[in-house]
Length: 99
Image 1 (cartoon, rainbow, N blue to C red):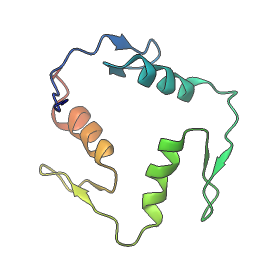
Image 2: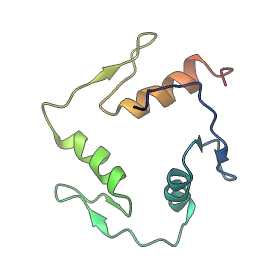
Image 3: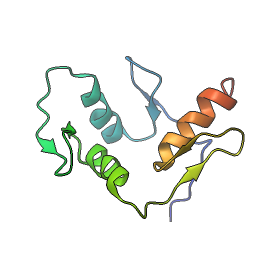
Image 4: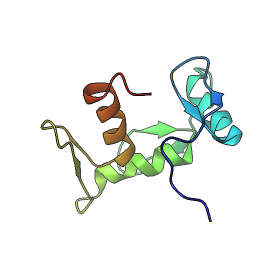
């Protein structure tokens, strides 16, 4: 059984940003966000948002859910409905020197 380990090695690194992962497939999927010519074929049915990544559309759809769970920052007044956004916020705003 896999366990969640924030300190595991992440040998697959994006050359265009600071993204890194331990899964080659995840890096391949991530690289799509840097392709400015990609076709954004997935559309939100409630607004004009478009993407080509299913995971991005799924995250986006949470903004339309009135019962969505909120993730508040413990250190400031930042709040989001996307857990990964809170993690990114913490890393950039409150722990910029952590690896």
